[in-house]
Length: 122
Length: 187
Image (cartoon, rainbow over all chains, first blue to last red; front, side, top):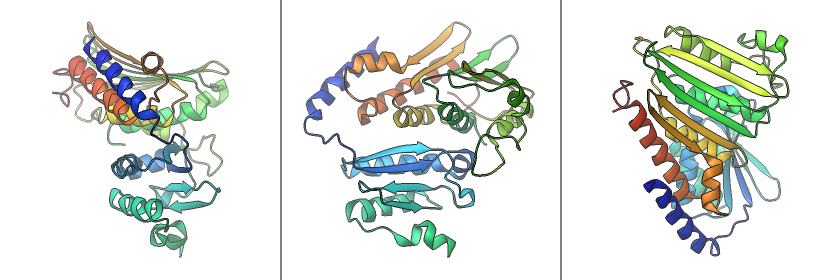
């Protein structure tokens, strides 16, 4: 099968690069993926995080999904959890906001206050 | 929900929360009955008979944040409005099988949607789960098993960007080769 050969080639290339990559994830991004999140467009948000992190070659961040975070009317929701356990909850997300969050929060370490749950609840 | 891929994301989430280590997703078209079947089978903790009977009721849920659960009721609605039905089979400690059927040519049948993208996300965000994906129509059969992929990968993580791209392309090709010309939304 041709595609298995392709997969093997991908593996060999990845093995070469692996030593360079820092495999320890320090920051976690968790996207709410329950019925409420999905209906509001959480999949696009998650893809945007993955794409943007890849584009900027940020290595110490992992993206995962969880169930309902509890504020369905503010979906899509994502949490950024720092290595020290500090948590920022971003709400009403879209791909454009995600790009700003990656640039300002992850790269420059300045949370985007206006997109947080605190700002939305005010 | 506007397509099956969104239901898939939703229903698979139930399996993950139920602690499944193996989740199978099967999409098949039966030529004789002209029906599309969408199935999710897991080996999670399953449901008691009593709960199973009530699970299509939106006011029945395991969630603790609020008392309304819409995932299964919405899938049931999508199936029924396209001349199909929802079937649920579950045994405590063994797992759950959920099947939604749709009349292929029914005007209200939702399209399958971005199945490759959804599956790739599910696989990348739940690496410890064995995912089995199957597409079937007549003699055409597509099968993807993440255990087999991990075997080939030999230590390389399955959420490596290039691996995920390969997975997404492979599933995409699988859909085209099995359902091309069979489902109106697939070329």
